[in-house]
Length: 328
Image (cartoon, rainbow, N blue to C red):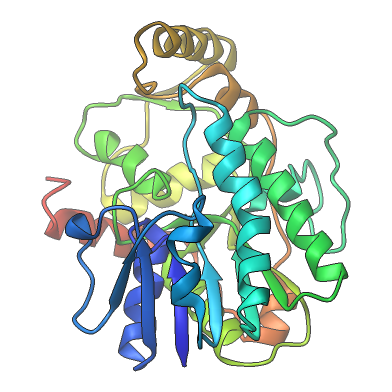
């Protein structure tokens, strides 16, 4: 198949590109800086960005599938409108460009955050949001981008929407690989305190990639799929991490109120000096006050989606972190 792929330099996108390349697909990858991209031999690179449709429109001719994994995954950026341009406006523009080029299928990568917190029974594809407010620009624009993709889907555009959970595992240490980035200091003994977290849905990256391949390569019954994972509480997460790494869990969790104050300080420093927050913002701390559990049974039934246990996935990720020199 001929596949046009965005977001290939990111965590999930990079893993997906490798899997597609191994399966002998003809891949055209969009990259802002081709000279910095490290892609397998044979991958065609188009210089451009998802926000600039004109930069890649010519490359869409003759493609079989447009796979959009590109997103702005940040806690904060100085120009908030960047979130809207990448996570909302670019989604609609890309869907229309793919349709104009007669591409038979468009696969859009949304996020569990677009569906909102579960705060109870795991959410399925058919459930409505249970929380009426949005916590930060990333959640806000992923929600709006999802609503836009659903609109085009309802109008007959050939769009498939995928909602990955908290993806983790070996791969690029981008902002999308949040679990790996967050546990490196802990595993190296530089972070004695944890953060009190509720239930999250931890999706091992190779499981997610295999489900993407199914959606890309076959005609699937449904238009929307949650690719969640092992729904585990904060206590269970730290227990599994300790058993997988042989390291003691944090001796205590930072109280939410204290974390929020520290996060607000980071936010203000970011606004004053134009640098990214080093750890969390107060908006992100609010996210940690909710449960984010999801029901992946539709994907399991229709895509053969498998869920690696958190303990097993963490063990594989930690082995990779050690072999790559990130963890002693």
